[in-house]
Image (cartoon, rainbow, N blue to C red; front, side):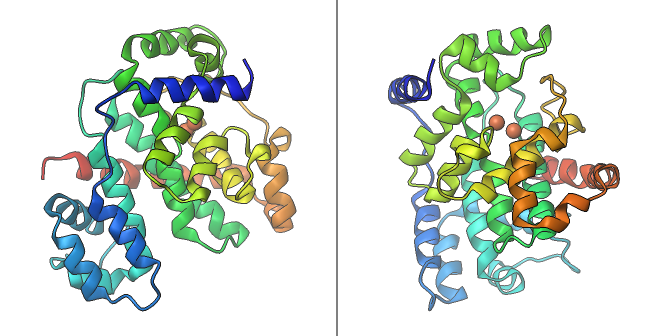
Length: 297
Ligand SMILES: [Fe+2]
Ligand SMILES: [Fe+2]
């Protein structure tokens, strides 16, 4: 099955779903407003306040361990001033994506899924900092949304996807390869179809499509390499969808490692063992964040 055929199959599968979740109009408008350099905090806050669920989720995220406010933040305007508008983009997108996929009827356990996703977001931000990547929030968001296609498979292709999950339990096969073999497409192509429907910016589409093949990225190979590497780290640590996927890797063989080393030669000297311990220390924060997001509003 080549890439073109897998993409065609994904388009058919996504096109066949009538009730595909939507991203709230307010989120899209916030993203558009933030492209205007003269926009004020007041304008953004007023717009966000028209969506109560988004406001509530944003406040929750803001008071979570990831942002570590020195005192509890209770007003959205104060929060936006405290954070700066760059972070608003991140909050508007992530809170909307989480809302779009609320529910418990899928094959994947949503909590484990979001722990993995926020874990990859956090590790992507750490790697981005280490290599001097210019947009840390973009790295963070990319990590959070990289596996969106999995939620589609879990919710809308429940039975065949359960078979994929069973299949990898007993075989040393990566999830993405098992999907290609059994479903004729993967969460990468499916995710790309969804991201296009939702008008995600090109660099996010690139990450969703190529986070397992950063060498094939066309828009931002460095960003794809960052997410790929942090995905590998999270999968071998405790942020791994509850241990579903078989994986082992040797950094020096990884395309992503080669791409990032070229970008920031000092990255090659990183003490990998120490880095893994740093990640282990951050795992409780990620778990707390996800559980705070998913406790009822
Ligand atoms: Fe993936
Ligand atoms: Fe992943």
